[in-house]
Amino acid sequence: MKLFSLTLISVICCFLCCCYGNNYKVIVRTGCGKIIAGTEGKVYITLYGEKGNSSTIRLHNEGKPGFQRCARDTFDISTEELGIVSKIRVELDCTRLSEEDNWFLKTVTVYDDTLKVQQSFPWYRWLETTADQKTESVEIKRNFETKYPDYKVTVETGVEEDAGTHGKVYITLNGGKGDSHKILLDHEGKSEFQRGQTDTFYITTGDIGLVPEIQVELDSTAGSQSPNWFLKGVSVEDLKRKLDRSFLWNEWLTPTADQKTISVEIPFFSLTTDYEVRVVTGDEEEAGTHGKVYITIYGEKGHSSKILLDHEGEPEFQRGQTDTFYITTGDIGLVPEIQVELDSTAGSQSPNWFLKGVSLEDLTGKIDRTFPWNQWLTPTADQKTISVEIPLFSPTTGKQ
Image (cartoon, rainbow, N blue to C red; front, side, top):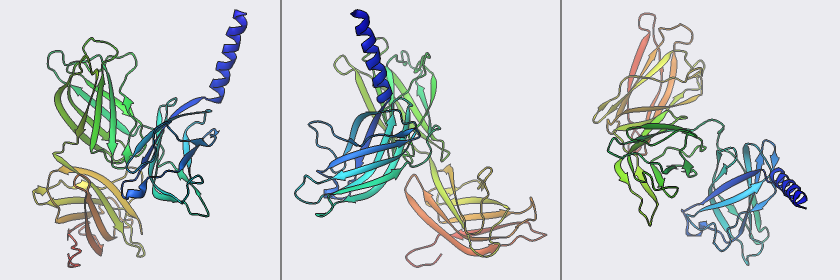
């Protein structure tokens, strides 16, 4: 009888593992722009993965109202093994409501607890129902491939006496496009967060945009040995945009007997400025160039070095093309002028270039500036390097 019971339990476990192979955490963010951004309707989700798709699952937490204005709702669901999730279907069902209802869906984040992979599905649109059609569904593809890490996180512990901790440390990245899942920073079998130590982790979140703030949590519930921690700071490198941001703390995190988990929110500390540079090449015949292009940014407080605009292995500055680059400079203040240089000394093929213009977005201060040119840069046999200074375009006067 005992053997039969064990066998039956094993069969049931195997069945459950086959049928419910993956656990997912689904995070849904509702917009804040309108008072009516939330919904009283029912919301369902279907996950589409490499190995198949899930059933249609209602997103519902018993006893809790969901999908209210500005809300961030989290749901735990289980499905068969799907592999990497590349697409989702979200359905709003208002059939039980007396009148139509709309919902502004910002983003859906799907965290695969088995594969430890997080995917972002941005929407930023309304799902609208009418009196005649009380259900509305949309299919959303993931923002971009997330099989590889998106961020490099470096954590520095102070050198003060007993600065290290044996507690668990978690991080949440609060990005411009959404927030990450709360992520455990852990190297299996290694001792992290010891006095004077720097620990590096690679994490996958999906594209949550630039990170202006992080949340660090220390959990000492597992034991009383070294519960406190002196956190010097955290740096977060965006591996896609090649931008590194520092989050300085230089203080103790001190749990108590009554509160063994403590978290702090740390804003981005900047002595530098990050820029997104968009270079537009004209659509004229042979407008593109194979020369090297450099930029110098002139600010009110100083200027940057001369920076090569280059994507390794990718052709830039071709006819009708817009090329985007991410660069970091010191704090040079507001930018009234830039200098663009074309260097054709490396070869004679396509030495000329029709530059339509440059847009420069200060990602730290969220300021976008335009520098139109709409002219040729034409090196000669005697002068193979040519540079132009382009002033800021004023939308008020329409002049540079």
